[in-house]
Image (cartoon, helix red, strand yellow):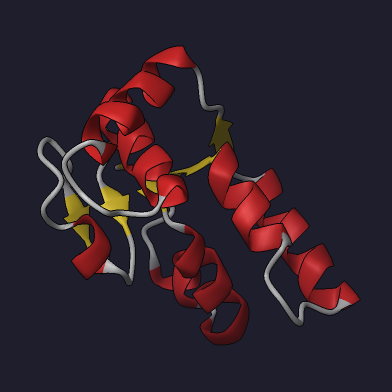
Length: 119
């Protein structure tokens, strides 16, 4: 199973270790936007920053390219979703990956996006 993780899933893993229950054959992907969002999260101490870095090192990071930027722009013309979320959603759509997020409200009405709150 291949999945794209939203930033809130990485941060939730830091406090609740939620990714340990995911089947071992799962391939984790994150957007480069998630890297920036996670590392700028307020209040992270050195241990949390190290844990995030270690966690992200075992995931495939997908960069925002022109096709993702164009898709995010297209999606943004018809909704008020924040740009980082549009870029993450566009990444999931372009790579045909389901997005796992705790923010279903922000993603659920985006056409072509498969989003869920669990594994």
